[in-house]
Image (cartoon, rainbow, N blue to C red; front, side, top):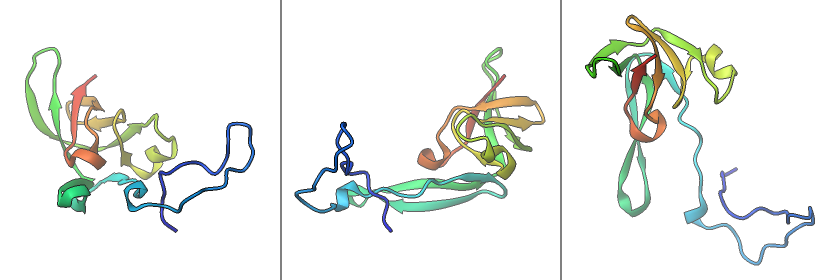
Length: 125
């Protein structure tokens, strides 16, 4: 079944809202990317207007910035330590924005949206 981001079928009172029209393609949603730790793999998604969005399916390297020195470097991602989006994501090594990942330089917080941007950026914490 398709994921819809249209209007709810319930009113604020809890009563059932009878729709006066069906779903539209513009209201279509998609499954989350759920970027995992593995060799880098991108998915191309066709968006509105024929444009393309890159989804990061898997990644094992990230652009890490040290806020103290302002220097950036590419480092390996060893694993996910903490993910406030979903506790089960830690067990499954799924990276989202705000996740704490382990790197050789130390722990880093992910600042990019891998499922939207197609790149993995982070800052050293």
